[in-house]
Length: 185
Image (cartoon, rainbow, N blue to C red; front, side, top):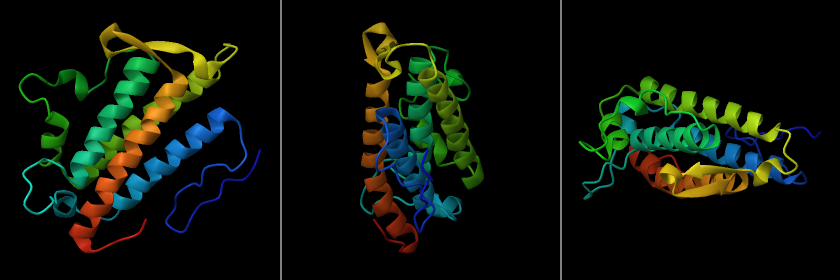
């Protein structure tokens, strides 16, 4: 087992030579830490900054809450095959299909961060459980997704989550620079 290297902004570097599960989880944790860094130390007003001239709900607060939902969907509902927890279970998604983005705008910074951190914690527990199963290839075990219309492997979920965070961390770079001028990666 190797020591985890933490970079200058507090992100755990993915392992350079590890098994597939540790490598995928390492890249996911790095991307999660990038979002945390991009939203760190901002109050609610900074988390609500929008791209000039755009009317979309794309904000750092919205990214945190959207990724909290994504974490719970893929790791709680799909991987653990359990019902979505609050706040997602209580949402009228037909009334507002962008609820996570829109509701984040009225939340305090600590509350939206706590929602994301709680979801990430559930995801980490679900992944640990999945990877310690008795299956010959725990990464290859499939789970029903999209209301049972398809099945995805643990490997697919991890790869998709790295992609999801990486894409949104690009948005976070721009929004953070608009909020207070902070730049970097």
